[in-house]
Length: 380
Image (cartoon, rainbow, N blue to C red):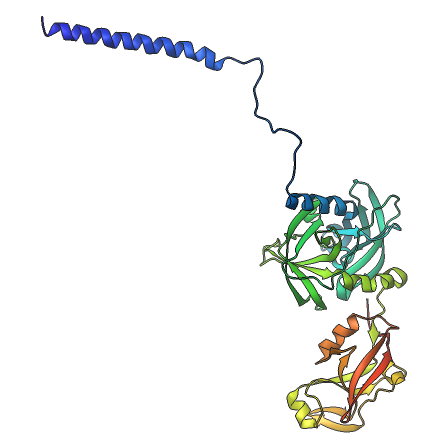
């Protein structure tokens, strides 16, 4: 009897516990599943605010986006089986005046039969190619539209590494996209055509196919560059290294592109020989760098200014040259060490500009003013 009594007591406790838990579970279920008359949410108090950095981003976008356009170019390629086949390409650009001129990259419209510009308000306009500058990868289009908002062109002369920059464009056809980064470097580069771009702006702001021709902006919303190239590592998308053409390079040629359809590049009108330390010592020159004038072209800029070419026939290896001409060592105070330096200086000027050329004539150092003429050898 003593053994049975604890067993009966234990069974009663277990039964009571089962009934209690079962009752509460079933009663809690409908209450938990019940739908309240109103959902209570935790909401932010007051209007949304932005920190200083976010506000700069927003301001730059609002200022820049009305000027940015999407450019669709249609070219024709030949297929062996199907014959002529239209091909479309996309890029970006930006409005530079109320007359409807749009600045973009040359490669965006290269080979195009038709070009269409889409504004930020989604309106589409046929565009005419007004001017091309292949060597600097620049082109100017024009559309007939009203109410245009020109971009504010800044100054790319005093840019510094670390400065914040913003790229607006249409990567992969996604219109009105903005990315942000910094200026990673300012360096000379060669574009795919082999042309030299002085002080190109390298940035880590994401630039992808479709961004080409769009503006690179500073924190005041001013255009400081034209997005042009990316380093892809073979992936055909941004690898964190993009390049923009300095806006000052574009500003120097815009008038020529609009007025003449091409850039009137200047020329000294000379044939020259680059000088290094060894050659300078061999020829007994007073400086171990520069370009030696071998020949001045009759009626050219150098000829009109009185610069002198060579008058002594000699050989460097098996190559005949004329020695005894003026040795150019600087232009406008900028050192000219070789022919690339000479080309870079010319790229900063237009035909009709007057430059101060520093030369050695024998042992005598001189400064000669030269009025540059158009280089008639250039092609589009």
